[in-house]
Amino acid sequence: MTESRSVFELVFFDVDSTLVRLEGIDYLAAGNNDVVRLTNAAMNGDLSVEEVYAQRLELIRPTRGQIELLGQVYIQSLIPDAAEVIATLRQQGSDVHLVTAGIEQAIIPLADHLGLSRRVVHAVRLSFDESGSYVDFDRNSPLTRSGGKDLVVRNIRARNHGRAAFVGDGVTDLEARAAVDLFIGFGGVTIRQRVRELADHYIDGPMLRPILPLLTRDLHDR
Image 1 (cartoon, rainbow, N blue to C red):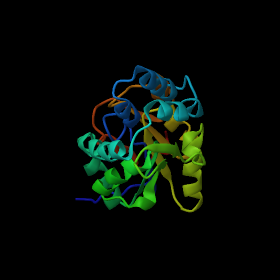
Image 2: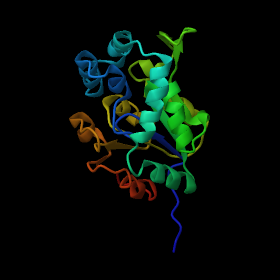
Image 3: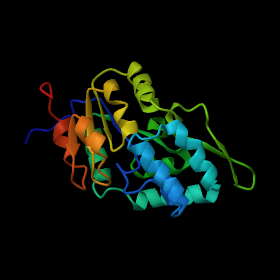
Image 4: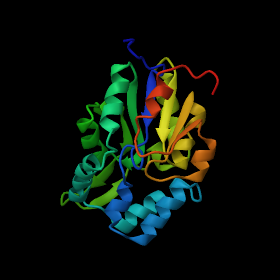
């Protein structure tokens, strides 16, 4: 049996609604309709990330304890075959990175669970006071602004050789399409029409496994 090998040296994944079946910020909002509305508007491209990022966190003001709990909820909410897919890509030679506007302290436990080093986690760090109350987020992070994922991906590619692919569900992920060789839209949690229309390939089903054939054969005719 011929061993498959990825033709993409770098594979970038969004996290919320891509690797996991929820939006972390909406989970923290515990049903706050204003937060859910802002999230959907940003993911559908109706509002910019910078218009909603600080506003949502101010509405929620999550504690350190709530963020730690979210990290465990992420693990429990993984797409069923996500760990297998990431392990397969790594075995086939891909360097897998997580690129998300999610909260770093909640993403790191998920990365640990997936066997990924903290080197490949690109997320937004929150700060808390001594009591664990929310203070602020890293306002220097490009991931809190429009085009941030594109910038992060380009910076990583500048230090690495080879082809790159991005897998994501939202318009903020789609912004990175020009920075990679292949953009795969994932609609297994939420279908976003703009992403469906503009992605190089689109996955409708609930599993991530269909991305593997796309990443393990050359796609010069895409």
